[in-house]
Length: 104
Image (cartoon, rainbow, N blue to C red):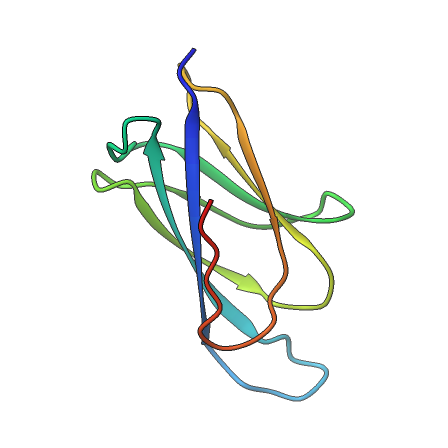
């Protein structure tokens, strides 16, 4: 099986601003590429809480990119990246502020 490298860029774009009762949604931009750096289309993406609750889902396009709206909340989030023929990849992250970016 080939290794799947998931690169995650957190845009932290506020979809709506509200009070404590209304969760703030942020755009999670994901780019998935293989070990050779080529984009991987049709990749299944799931964002989970530490308690394994699903917060969002997406699938990468032909360019290996996807956009998922996620309630920011507190605590760690886990991005799970899966595609047949590749090893599963997981990335743990936290939302902290505008302009935050992760790449791995």
